[in-house]
Image (cartoon, rainbow, N blue to C red; front, side, top):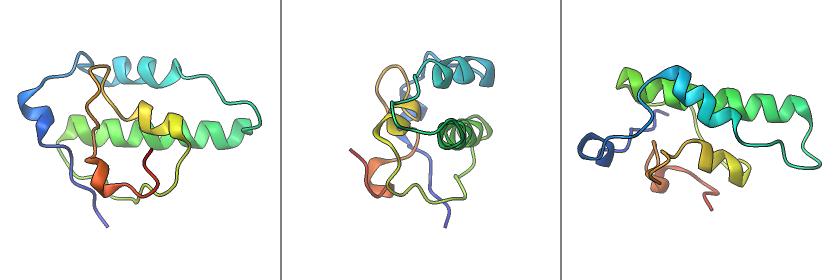
Length: 93
């Protein structure tokens, strides 16, 4: 199932303009206590996949179900807009 990108991002540009900036954004989130390093690295990798789709202008080809709450912050711009519309994410907080 492909998740469309958020059309609101077309009219509201993000302060993150490329993948290196997106990686810096994602890496700034600290691993939650009790979250294994492997699970946290996987969470960050999926967030980067969403950002890559954003910059490529293509839908995200996976589901986003019941991820850690910090994940949903990773796939928002610093301005607060989600890269994928919230209605397309199960478990979005």
